Length: 476
Image (tube, rainbow, N blue to C red):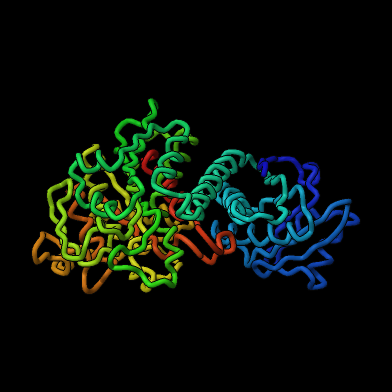
């Protein structure tokens, strides 16, 4: 889809379908002689209720009247949702060129959100269908505004496209999306230096926890290190590190998962997908900040070589972890990856992981869980979530939770008997030292999000959040 912004009148764009928003008590913009849009509103066919759509034909084109709700209620997330609903109607009526009239008083944030909602809602994953359905998505999208919104529109295109690429990575089945294939995808990023290390190098680094997860699979694991280091990096900005869990398939190992839902464990690499595509988008946008990414890509499988409950693993940092469940493998991978990020000089860290079912039980698909060792950094990360629409809810990380994971044979246990999501974070906290760190447990938000623009399959959650965060840190 080609996306552009213009200050020209929407009727001059050549669009075959023009979307005009209406609010309670507001007049219809762009009402024309012979295009009685106001009459539709007066007749009740068009209504200002949020999300209500009415179609009219006039002046040789289609007009969609979209309810915005009460004046002042349209925020970025509602704009994404409305744009997704409009796209669905536009596809039904065969639109080829869709033009949104930016609502009066709306600024750059809303313009970008309309673009994001449209592109995200237009995503389809048909790669494995022998006869994929014919696409009815518009070829062009134009945002018509009184002022210049070209920059936020262009930014939104980059972010939404990156999120959709992350969704491709998530949705690809595990027989094709192996650790090696994920590493190949990372290597193809423009403007990003990528180093990939395999099983031997992981073991040589002393990453005993990461290596143990990899032992059960014939697939080669991959420690993927990404570096974006622009010459124009803003002076004084901290070195950001994004760390992603990328278990490309999680059988649970010897602590095997039940059959029901196991097919969804191709999504257990969602954190790594978000990190890779966020750094790719940061490079594409040319943000003036240094960012490193560390992605631990691995399969958690059963074999005669697989780790066992009761094993004690020595991490790169030196801490030993006693395995209670081989299905609590993500924190083993992340422990060594976080230590690696610290060794690379990270000054601020965010990790993303589909870590626990406990966070799904607590927060569902509305929020991802946020746990942190630094209040200021937690607040900055949460604000990026609010701005991007990828919401975070902070969970406690009291020192008392450390007692839940105190080891019997090793230093710590890899699973806590209570407070499962917090117990996972309590383990990870031991591997970042004093570096400000935020752990995002995205198990509930990474797939089947249920939103109008990301209902089923991979959601790409975290890509837009991480880019927004990088922009915020670069501006500070």
